[in-house]
Image 1 (cartoon, rainbow, N blue to C red):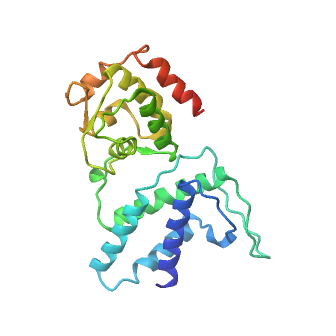
Image 2: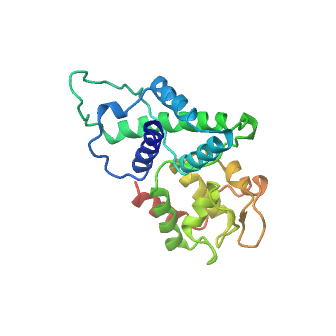
Image 3: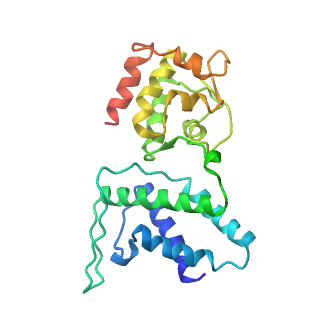
Length: 238
């Protein structure tokens, strides 16, 4: 593996660690790249492949790894400051790492998709979550109100929403309570809406009806059957 390939691998590994809330140890200031610097690295990375098939295979693999991750857009601009006199290891905050990861992650996906010829019209805006905490929230909800039938695990529910898993979800609660859950879950996701959930075409009501946009929207209620229990779970995760 040459230096450019190694660096791309290291960047993806770094993004994975940030996404998984792992402690980020000492990293050289030179690891952090501007978009222009990253583009230079990517160009050198692409030309190392012997043929297009080999290139596409590597890019698709990296793209699949990147699409397992997601980062919330930061409110502040990222500024990469270097001490040119020494190679120091800056002590960045968790928020800085997340903001930087969002920028680099988004750019890598964009470049890799363009490289393998994915047209904009083909790129669906899929639901992504901000942090792994969503798995804990859904697990707690299921323990509290048993909203999923026994053939579905909480993790599988999240993975179906984000397009990582292809299976049908069968609910164990009324549609109004499920709609209320979705409104509370929204803060844990990006590109999330009642419509995007319905458009998975994978979620069935407790009566076996496929939930579409219309019947899911019609289930809106400010005081569903399981409201108090649902509120209690989300309160515990604030």
